[in-house]
Length: 558
Image (cartoon, rainbow, N blue to C red; front, side, top):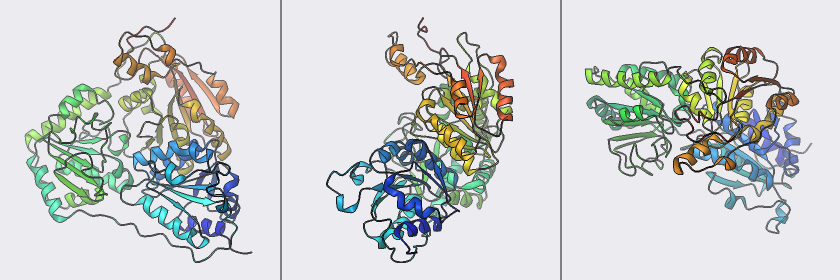
């Protein structure tokens, strides 16, 4: 049998250690799926929507210690459906390679069926768009795409594959994966950083996305650093698992809209160290802490891409390096004895954090306060589980009341895309067999990508899906009340929902319901006892308790 381009592409993917590809089948890349049948080590996961497939690939790119997740979609509608996941991966600095079927080369430029110019379409949501024009380029382009997706600031890379190229005879060898450069800190930068930490009484260390790719050893060394140098550690938005929430050096969660008591205390810092944190408007509290472009305190930023450091903020000590290398460099030095002021600073931040974490909430007349569900999760979610979250106010309860550990895996869309939770939980269950995957999602997001429960059924995985149903787009309602107090808004935010228990059961999943707080423990125990199929736990949540921090001010509609 003649070796085809489709075959060499499959060989190249295998050479890059690809074992999971998420797709929605398309006629534009049949030559590749045909070739993949000869590579049983690569599992092709057939999804129900390209948005779901893309979210799964983005999640996979977060679980492989810096290696890219892979999605395979068809041209036109297929790739445009998947763009939400590219937007997520680009803003989240997640390595991802998306393979896109294209029209035949002879038809390019004729406005052929579903034809698009992908270099234009994807220019703002990918690091690069490569197109395979000649058979001899096929393996080289795959190697280039993975190298770029995983280097510097990680992100998505698109590879365009014309439909007529797959069956052509292959030329040239399979190009081996390229060794990734690992930027290391300069000795003089480590000396200065050590000096800045030693001279600061109230340092604040934010740890973010680049630390998430450092593996178990990186997180263990981060813990050692916090203890040896007496540093408060604050995981950033959508990275709560990077430091144990019950550790005495936990300095508070630096997420979106940090509670005022904690933020006020954090703002007393005399040094900020962004360790593996890219920084964004969410983390900087809308560019106020640190203030942009000129921070109100000395700022150190450690990120593996020099082009990213200083792009928005003036940074006093920029270190273009792997954050784990910086941690190891500091651990190799003798840490100074912590002053009494430093000890009080760390303890003060931790005391505020523990007060916010306390399992306290108000009973609500219109439904279950979702705090009760999230607080109870400490007794049900295993320490090695993957937890995924959609965007929405319901997630504030999870971040407030559930104490994440470094042994957890947390997956979400940092950019705030709805629809991420369910597909990411499916991907986590596939990537981490034998470990639980638990998704938290609202009634808005569940009907965007909840159909990927069908994918979970097909693939034989059993995520637990916790659904907060308050019959509305609660986050939008909260913002409306803040901007236009006293004005009605329910017509623009209320939802009419199906019977979610029956909906879950229609997929073959288990469907359970919580309508009162006294049902929480028993229903959660029942849900986590089911391991042979997905489980949807429908929580009839309070709409009056708008978030973990705020109640609705307008009365509910009659």
